[in-house]
Length: 78
Picture 1 (tube, rainbow, N blue to C red):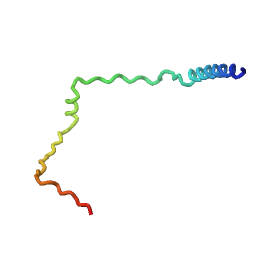
Picture 2 (cartoon, rainbow, N blue to C red):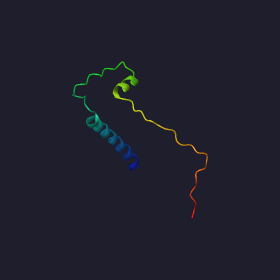
Picture 3 (cartoon, one colour):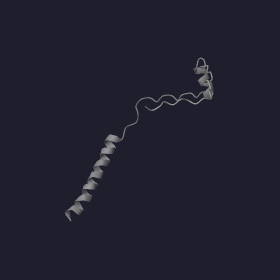
Picture 4 (tube, one colour):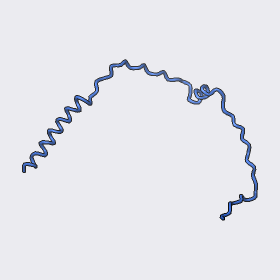
């Protein structure tokens, strides 16, 4: 019977202590640094800004692979 009374009382004490700990330690006061001014939004679309940032587009010269009709030889097991 003593255990049936002690457990809820201990839980209540632990809850009160945790609430005090949270309010003292975890509640952070407001920032003291001045806030940065908001950034100005640009009116140009993203693609135009990207093209301005890239000096020259990369051009790759690709030639088609040689096509053959004969099957690829498979390695033989020894």
